[in-house]
Image 1 (cartoon, one colour):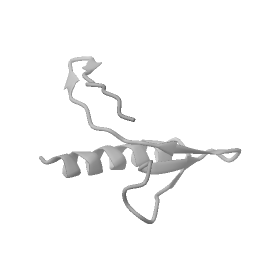
Image 2 (cartoon, rainbow, N blue to C red):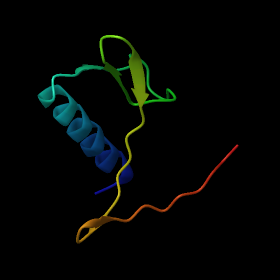
Image 3 (cartoon, rainbow, N blue to C red):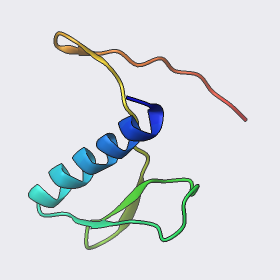
Image 4 (tube, rainbow, N blue to C red):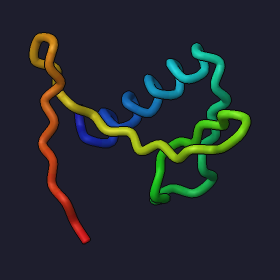
Length: 68
């Protein structure tokens, strides 16, 4: 699986679980935004950036780095 496919799966899973929890999910019209989805919580809208990470047992392994 390539990184685009993994990202699409992560976005779909995040949207699925949010909708299941009763949250309205918004998607940007254009790509390459600073977020993948937005959640409309009624009183505010929050931006969501989705990432893919491997799971090792009960632990999600995340390699972090920062850029400016």
